[in-house]
Length: 176
Ligand code: GTP
Image (tube, rainbow, N blue to C red):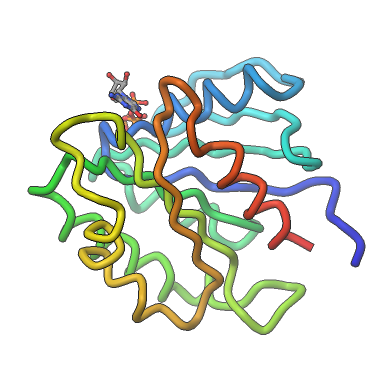
């Protein structure tokens, strides 16, 4: 197995789920090699982490920008899907977004395997009292029904970084 040195990773999720906070934390740990260029709808960050040079596309979670996510599906090696574990009202919306994404033709097949691109799901804001348990996140997102993509669910706190390294390590191992 030869690891890709460069990997494009999409960071998606509903608005306010913590995507930008995840990116900020990851880039402060890794070696940052590019400056943020504020772009309408998304930010691009390039940094090293878990043995990969990651180009992270931090997509805005605002619904008006969601069609923009799809433009980046064709050159994507992995996805970080961020969930706000305390946003119980919108778990069904997040589940729907996840399903739409994994069923998209560009996402179905990875270049190196017969499975689709690997998807790391961060059950973020797990530190909040209002966060639902990770088992419930798994159930609400119907993760056990997904057979087309390697999926990994990790509880995280993007403010402290808890769970981010373990999650990214898994993603890195999937990108070969
Ligand atoms: P959009 O740009 O609207 O798509 O939001 P986003 O997904 O980039 O969320 P952002 O990173 O801006 O975080 C939203 C809010 O949640 C901020 O106030 C963060 O400080 C907070 N936040 C992010 N991650 C965590 C977490 O793990 N725990 C807690 N308690 N707060 C968090």
